[in-house]
Structures are given as C-alpha cells and as structure tokens.
Image 1 (cartoon, rainbow, N blue to C red):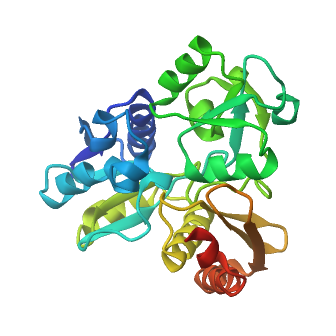
Image 2: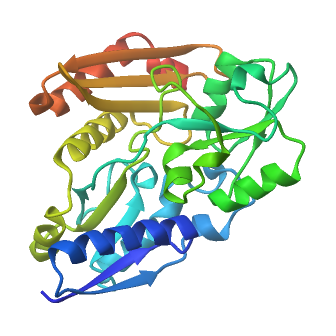
Length: 302
C-alpha cells in the first residue's frame, strides 16, 4: 500500500488533527502518499440547534463513516469523544495516538476561576454533561447554549456579556490558545466526556493494510484507557442525551476509571471510581458500570 486517503471534518481544529495524524504516519512511512479528503458533516452544517435535537454524537461522524464504507477514504480521524461508543457494522476503532489533556477548562475575560463568577452570572456550554456539572457546583448560575467550533465559541464569548464558557482543554491546546484558559477544572469532580482529549482512528474491519499502517502511531495506554471509557459508555447506554462522563487514566498503582452521571439539572449525581490492572481494563469498565447502576445511575439519567 503506497497511497492513503484520510477523511476529516473541515473545521480548523479537525484539519489540524488530521494533519497531525498525517505527519505522524509520514514519520514512520516516509514513502506514503497521503491525501486529506474534507467531508462536511451534519453537525458542521447545523449550528443553531443543540446536539440532542439533531441526532446526538453521530451528526459529526455519519458522513465520514459513509465515506469509509463506500471506499472513498481509507481512514477517518475523529475527536474520539464524537465517535459513538457502538459503531456501525463493518467499522472498527483502531486506536488513538497519545492523548492530549482530557480536562475541561473555564475560559473567561472577566474571572480567574469559576468560583469567582458572581451569583446570577452567565456561562455558555453546548454540553448536557457540562451543564449538569456546572449546575451541581453553581446552581446560582445562568447556563446558555453554545455550538460551533472553538474559534466561533471564543468569538461569541468576546462579543457577549457572558462571564465565561466551558470547553475542552485539548482543543484550546491544539490551536495554541492556552493563554485564553482561566482555570483547569479538576477531572475527579468535573468528570470529562469519554474519549475527551484523544483522537480516534476508524477504518473498515477487514482493512488489515490500514490497521497495520496505523498501528505504528497508536499509543497503547491511551487506547486501553479510551477503550475502557467506551466500554463503560456502551454498558451505561450513554450518549449526549444524558449527563454522563468517564475518565480512565494510568496512575502508579494501575488503571483508575471514574464514572459520572446525574439528573439534567445536576441536583442529583453519582461519581464512582474503580481501580485495577490495565490488563483487565474491560472488566474494570463493566465493574464500574455495574457499581453505578446499582447506585441508581440509570434512574438519574432517565
């Protein structure tokens, strides 16, 4: 195989991520001819409505997956948190390069921390999970819906009287906009979305050539952590219609996985953590899901 076509969304961040994957592949396979095919998704076209009104996570991935299945592209590069935890038949998540920061961040032109925002202040976010976690910590705040790429979100913040926005650290980092971050939110309390901070590579199940080629840039620890998060979300039947988060990471004594779910208004919530050997990542994810379900997570999410 000497040619590879990568499928990417057209946003500045998505293209940057796809170019990072291309450059990583070229380091290992310098003779490869790599083309990036820009594909517009439903999520890029419809920026007015919340995700849950227009089809959830798959609005960022369906067109890319169709292009894979129709052999128009060989490899799709996603922000892994956008990739549904259960894939279409015939497709496979092949893994992730090393993960960026998984945390959420508070971005503000007025305040250094979320705690400093006065009662009645306005915070914008497009995520049901972030909204619920905000309302749990600060039920006195006014939460505003927010869609669009990072540049759009920052521009809306700059043009508004909002007190801040909540977004992913990884997106800000990748675009070199770290100076905009006011505060990193503690992931043990403000639990990230499953897969947040990681890129997800997807291809057709029987494309052994593509899987072999991509394997050289896959980070084993990142992929095992992300697979555990995806396993947890599948077990919890979690999508972006419910406030749900999951964060797996390697610490000195092994793999730690934290799960989060709550009611929509954040008033009732659950956070649980399990730990064990990374070899048993899948079992740990199932153990965490069972623990959450036993403590009423499904009822909360309903």
